[in-house]
Image 1 (cartoon, rainbow, N blue to C red):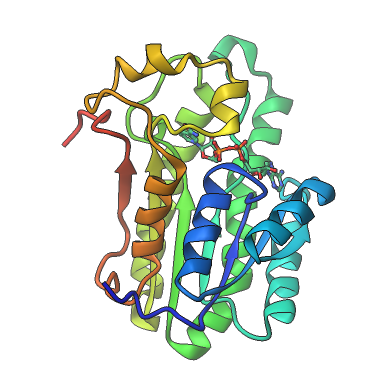
Image 2 (tube, protein in one colour):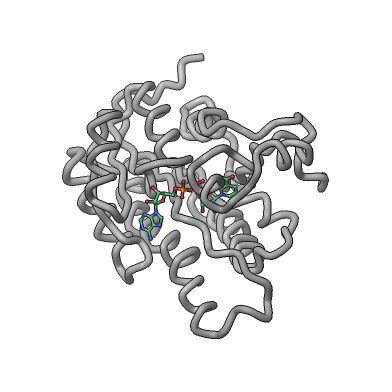
Length: 245
Ligand code: NAD
């Protein structure tokens, strides 16, 4: 299928590794000029060189960082950001009793405001040209809460509400916005969190953990021209984990 996005410009957040990197690679393969960001400048630069992206160091949990990032990416890529993938690292696991008010506020900055601020910055350019694709990486935990992931369960569900409501506001401008819910996908994060691949695989209907490139294929399609009638949705790439219909 011709995705008809060759020559477009994308900003993929949180992309020195994991899902973000896989999405950036998929977009680059479609001929999309792509900027990536992450906190660690050394690792970011290495990834940018390996995949052929523009690397922009940025800590998305800092106030205003997302807006500056969008400006810088547009400058370095030479025009409006057409495709924005909003993605950061996930919160630490915890139950309700283990999270105090300061941690809730920090979680809100990390998971919520880090999504809102770049979208706000990218919208004027997308509106002016009457075309845009916004994708938010959330989690299957946003639809069906998972044990010990209170922060993710609570805050990411709100992002789905925001994406759906926003789709009504920006649809007339030719811009789509969708949330993508990864299930268990083999990234460094999953390994670091101590998940045992063979144990997790037993809980997945397809009997295995997902590959980052499978998630990236969904993101790349939703960023494409042929996906122009899909908006306001939260779509899982989870090997069949979610039961809700
Ligand atoms: P990862 O840790 O492998 O990669 C995260 C990327 O984001 C890295 O490049 C990291 O440098 C960057 N990053 C983290 N915090 C940042 C910040 N403050 N500013 C800028 N960049 C930052 O994670 P992943 O597995 O690719 O997951 C990506 C997202 O998807 C996370 O939010 C995670 O919770 C969610 N998710 C992942 C899975 C999975 O199985 N991998 C499942 C459900 C949800």
